[in-house]
Image (cartoon, each protein chain N blue to C red):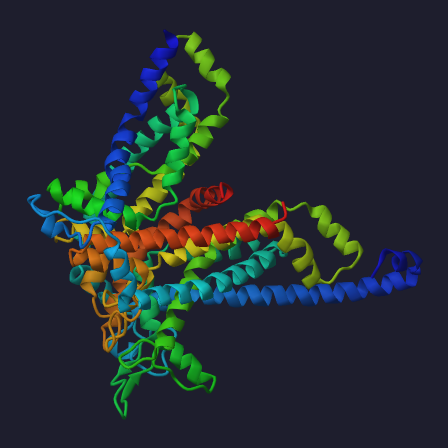
Length: 297
Length: 314
């Protein structure tokens, strides 16, 4: 309806349209909720199926039509999964690699971002542009040579092969540098006048002020260790250093056919559980990290 | 004096990152490009430094002529061309719908973000379980003990069950499963970015549309989509980049065999092919394949940027 017709509309007419508008609004709101509800159900279904399958007996799992809630809850699938996949060992390995690589990565990221945000040196802009340019190159291109490098160094099947090659992340440096730049330069100059050392200023002022970004980086890095698959499988596929995702795939090689799905789904649920906990308690940090990566595009 | 001291200090702060980048980022770029242009380069043959490799394009021609490469490229292209538009459209609809409601908005937003924090191998195994048929599938008279939940739902609505991923399954059935899984996996990131974009749109546009009582779909196509176009362009470009690097989701559903039992490697992708060449000590070919992948990603990104420059309204 154009503005002109609106103007000539009588009061009675106005009332009529407003009730009609109300009805269409209720109808369309219902439609919106129905659509979102359906999509939410689709998104949630695999999680639901994972959990109820992990609690069924094998005989019940094979029932057709299936049961949508286990008639007899079988917790023993979980202990069986834990031993079949030797999940304890995999958890331990992944935690060691995750924690050590996160701590080292944070130190390197803080130093590098500080240099780019606060210090003056020749070729700063060019160096930063070159760093950003490497983000375009697919990781596979690096992997081919890195595989040869770590083999020559004799690092295969060690912890450092899983930690050292990925300590520097240009993306994290970029994120933190943006955050550091927002801290007013006057603070830095005031600290200089007081004779505070750079290191002390960095630790006492800049790090606390960028804590949310550092937490985002920590979570993303830990999740990276938890979910990494290709590189660990390539360079550290022995029992002693195998990481969780690779171990899960190794323990259950068959995906199709007559598989003991309840146990397999219990293992999958156990591997997913820490991720869910992170999601429940630290969601906002993940979301802000992810969405900030979006803004730079 | 002070200037030079700062110079020196800056490089000290940068040192750890620069050393690691030189070893694990800069050197690989140089070395991988070099290996790609050395005829039949193999890490095994180069041990001892005796063997020399001629310069040439042999690795590239051999990769391109390889039937497995053509299959992998086709698979990757199909996955990209279907999953990127489907997931972008669905994410747009979900984001707009989420933006239009008040009660339950936060709860639903949380649900839609959930797939982002999952392990793609682990959830791939769940998708395999949902589509798997237990019984003697692929034989002349199949004896089925369980059709799997997806087939059960299809049968509930009166349809015929499909052999999705088991022995004897069709290529398109496999592809369908992968498309569903990849779209499911790609939604949360896209929804998050688009919701962020929607929050930034000035409410006045919608007020004006309301005064004119513009129909909903017109508001969507004439106001929301144009104003959201930078975010849409970003989501589409990153979607294509991720699509061309697809690998682990297929390992999740089908395992290392990258295909159903009767035809392993049928669903191999570009990245899978690179690792296959690496595993068989064909570093020259692996490097050539990686460079081809890089070029494809670069070209697709440039085309996307070109198109979006014409279409994107800031």
